[in-house]
Length: 320
Ligand code: UT7
Image 1: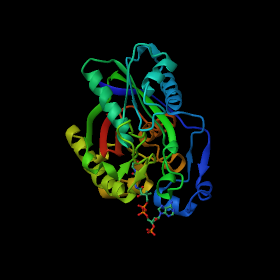
Image 2 (image 1 turned 30 degrees about the vertical axis):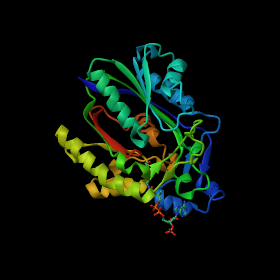
Image 3 (image 1 turned 90 degrees about the vertical axis):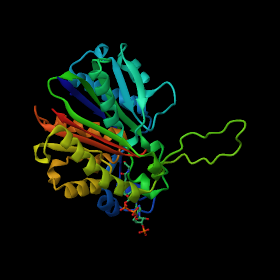
């Protein structure tokens, strides 16, 4: 028996902004954005919040899994863009979906959030502390980017993805997470001011700031090494894997990983073209698209791999 995914769901806010519309806000153009990122358009939240989108994605995953929300005894929600500090996004989702028996908490591992959440759920389930978990990645990054900064506003976007995990015959074969706080300032965002009555002056930089090329190089170095280790631990070869579902940060990062690992690009599904970079939500949104399109077959071996702020990275090898 293993911890396996038995249902997926996702939600994208209906408002779509294409590259030409962004070119009206900052000095950029469709050609540059497509060439450097692979993105053509992205979904942007208007009134939708992180918890609202997470709820919609969760309801879809619950329906897909065919379970009763009361069966869920753990909710782990990964986000770096909660609309409030407390109550947590996971507690709000619990209330909205009627998962009255769940223990709920949020975690922040930026773009690696979903693989961290899956690893956490696996640990709870393997330890016998939970039976059925709802894991979610949900982000409203559009509300945190500087819409005057062309290096970030073209990249980040909004959406949510969710999965139901439980003990099944097939599931996680290997799971890894890593962090390197010493490089964390290459991707940063100070969301709240840290003033109190003793501290008068603080610098308010509420927007996401990123040294893009540093994150790019980090991803292309760490992702192949992480996947190699993941497969080695499970005794599975690269060729045996049907799909490599990577965080949809940038199509060029994914292409570089494919080239470096000598794995055909066709094995790296992508939706960054229409979704942009939705951080912790990107892997579950893509997984849900693949699931609903019938791409995932019983027994397929699938690698999930996230990387980003913290810095954090991690991966799972799953037998579907
Ligand atoms: O989600 C996990 C964390 N994030 C990531 O994984 C993102 C990783 N990084 C990236 O995806 C890429 O670094 C970016 C897409 C952010 C930037 O692409 P790049 O090819 O690394 O561009 P660059 O930052 O090296 O900039 C190249 C040039 C610069 O001009 P100069 O200095 O050469 O004259 C930039 O000012 O491109 C310029 N530039 C732009 N030009 C037109 C930067 N952004 C834009 C833009 N439109 N939107």
